[in-house]
Length: 252
Image (cartoon, rainbow, N blue to C red; front, side, top):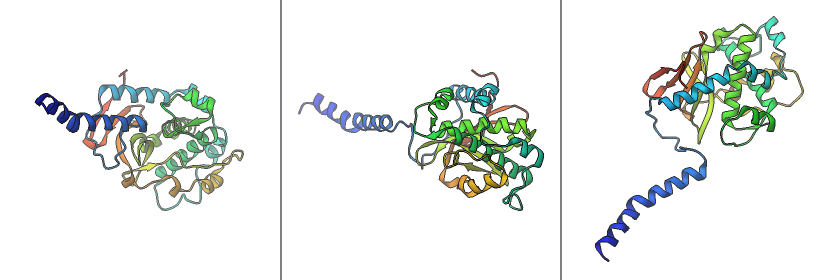
């Protein structure tokens, strides 16, 4: 075997083949990363910040909030009577409990509008028309309606306790997080099985959505980057792995 042939074979065996196989795995999976043990050490890039800032614009869109709607929830009851539920005492502070319940209500709304199906990319109009969506659809729509509910119930201070997150859990995944006792806990938006029809009051919502159904073990999730729109309206894109953040107001 000549030197040229040996060189080509060496490159193929040690460089080309692993790269091609890796690329094929990425393409076939439809995801960028699947290794749950992968360590992320990335400061949000300008492109990433711009993408999540566009997500923030959708979350705050009153037009989109109205398109998603509030079917299945009696918001007037909550406005008049508050959040007195069987799970409301003891374990969490009043603000933490209200945040949990508002997330549940938003999650119930979304679950009543769409069924889970793996899709590519998030288009809210298409998702609502097809009544189908994946984890990204569930998470962003739930965050959108959480934003709307806190506005309508005049509880905007709860926005400091919730955020949208992109990360890994079994595969690349989108979910929400809620701040409880000073720690960010994953809130899983894709697990509800709410029957269509009944209007949700606090007791029914608690029966159908137990805390342990949606609040998940943080060790099973790896956060890559998160988006929070706080009570003052500031947009924060945060890479927790480097304790870094960027205020991206105005970034496009």
